[in-house]
Length: 306
Image 1: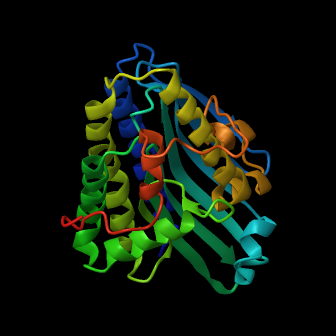
Image 2: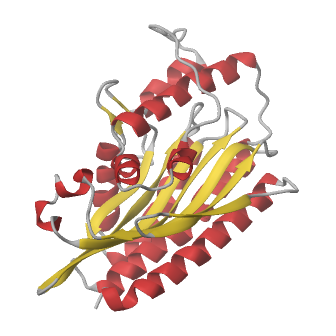
């Protein structure tokens, strides 16, 4: 059944890419918006990458669509899922990341994806995955709560347990073990979603993808004109280093993309345009920079008593 609807998933994802780019370009106000280039994969498939650089709001951003397929899965897939060995596969998805100029506007990332693997004489193995997360440098509690309210609202039609489960998974997934901190304030992360039938799972993926702009753009509008100087900019670049560390050390999607022969430029589009590292950096006590640490640990952001 899932294989019959691969084209439906692709149509949704291509439309989502269009809508995300349109909404983000309007928010940025950059006349040129996103530029597109398409690519093909020798082993099968390809995609279209859309990137904005040096915009009014976004220093760098990208919204990528890809559909790759082949007869052999990379080691990063079969090591965790040995039952996939010997299967052909299709992996289709849209991923996006926004790195704003202003340190008071959070970085944000998201993706929605679908995977299906076949083997003659056996039923297909398929699932949906995705989510979105927020990485502020100068966090505002009202913004974080807004972000999680939208995430919870997207999940609620699918069960009361869905938001807390995928919120906790996000906290766990985007955790920098070598730094003992979360990458940001979380959001949603889900994978291997196939338990309630194709139609229900596909509807959930659409709910998550369709809610991203509602979650992110109000925060962009609130913070885009907040004044900042060299101190804030330096701290932003330092914290972007953590983003790079996570993507290169821990992110499964980056590893799968590189091992499966995806387009390197598109896979590494998620990297910030500039970042910095400083040896044994410690922020001044009780400074705005020191305040970030309290946000880099899992907690119930919707507990209004906090």
